[in-house]
Amino acid sequence: MPPPEKLGRSGSSESLVSKLVQAGSVVGFLVAVAAVNLWRSAQAEHPVGALAASATASAPSGTATQAAERTLEEARQAAGAKDFKALALRLREIPEDSPLRQSPHYAALWTQWADAIEQKVDSLREENGRLKNPDRETPRALLTEIAEAPEVDPGRRQRAREALAQMVGAPEWTPVGSQRVIVEGATIEGAQAVIQKNRKPVRECYQKGLTINPDMEGRAAYKLVVNPRGAVTSATVTVSGSLLASVGACIKNHLRSLTFAEPSEGETATVSGVYTFIYSSKGK
Image 1: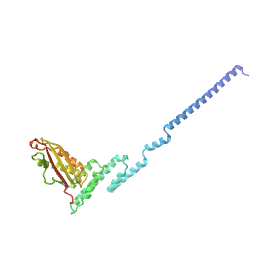
Image 2: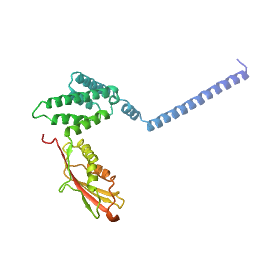
Image 3: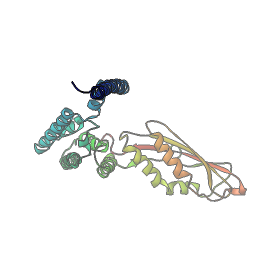
Image 4: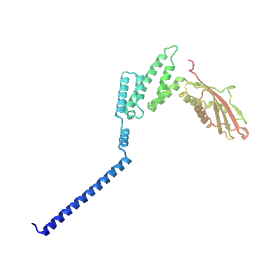
């Protein structure tokens, strides 16, 4: 039988181990509880479903991208077949937010489309020169398509606008009524000549409007106030018919820059008149 003191030491060691095991269980339990609480807190702030939905929404759609690529390929095939109507339709079917719209291939296809339309217009013009009753509407409609296509580069759009203005023909216009400029309040020597000399800028205002509305015509009535030094201090222009307001504003800006001879007796005078605009090719 072991000595009593050895039994006491062994029993003390076993008691200590037992206490450590119990303490470890408590600590483990507390750690587990803390972990569960942290997990619940994380779920409350970032639910798994919401995170998954967010990831799905932010990720690019492979299906949409593939569909856009197929549409671009169909556009290439239409260009190869010289079916330029289908080409434009396919290109416009590509979603506006698709990266393909920023690609060089997309821009090149629009350039190919615009160049083909221009060639068709040139061909129609040549054919019209041999016809007794030429078709003027088709070339005009084709050029309008280019001018109004935002996907086409600015240079080609501007070229189409200029061609439209040339197709319409030079406008014929004169002051209405007595064919004279009306001067009131004082006498201004050579007022009629000043107005006549500056017809070209007014004509250009009209031609700019024709690129927007090829059938535009009407009247622009003006009234200028001329100070004793011959400078125009104010100008009003009122348009009628189908003339665009922008045409009236353009004419007004030009008339404000005119300089007349000094009115008689140092007085302020008014100069007024009316421009009538028609285009010479109408009905031809």
